[in-house]
Image 1: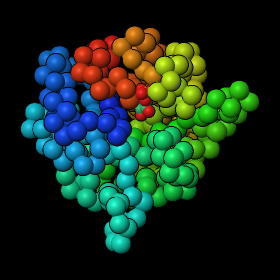
Image 2: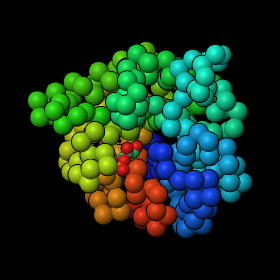
Image 3: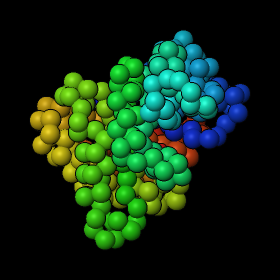
Image 4: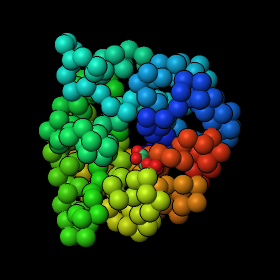
Length: 251
Ligand code: 13P
């Protein structure tokens, strides 16, 4: 059966000491019977040190927040999947709406990023999400379907098993407005349905689908209680160890 996962996307926050302290505090506060997969996504520059700490203590995995779509070569300032994997990092987050929005990453670019990540043995946390406009125009289901099918549905069944989906409605990110548990569940169920159509029931049932967007310790219990919500991709609330831990404990 699919895993419950709580991932902290630290975005462009924290100096190195703060990042290591946060990782250390969360690891120390984890309940001894924790069976939720916990993931930290620090900036590239902190990834190696944070990951080393996680590997040593063995309780948390890490993710990069992005990856270059090119395999290697003259791409100044970029970081390759091969480099990330060489640190023994487990995941790459791909397709976050901030990357799509501020850096113009298209579904086609993201398809390449997914491919190069899987080729280099990174698992993928693939983000999708609609704007408020799309939702108000009742275009949100079509939009999500397009994002997922354009970037993921070319994958073989075996490769698709290495993908976690994160549904993050853009209107909920950093706004304090969370999707209601019913709104999130409705979309997660839809996502699982389209996975089922493409890859069959067993793969669909084994794919973890996370919710992201103003998820805090106040609403995580109600969200995670839903059948198709298998955890969260947490921004702001992942920067505080107590808040992050209470989100982890809300299953
Ligand atoms: P917030 O939790 O700050 O809304 O951010 C969500 C997010 O973008 C996680 O990737």
